[in-house]
Image (tube, rainbow, N blue to C red; front, side):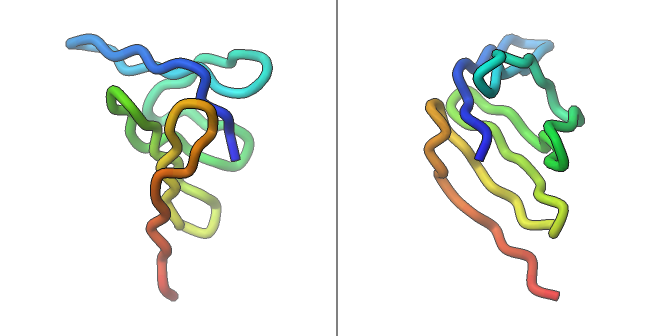
Length: 70
């Protein structure tokens, strides 16, 4: 699971730094095979290749998982 190290939210931007390298990502960016779907002031929502969505908080703590039934 990506480790979220910082979340930056303003009126017109939502960014997060992730991983050991501190890569900066925004909504729509890819991180490996995951896609950033949403960033709020406390969490980042990733879409997995399977379609499942995983909400991750600071430090890489998994907040919630939305599984997609096929």
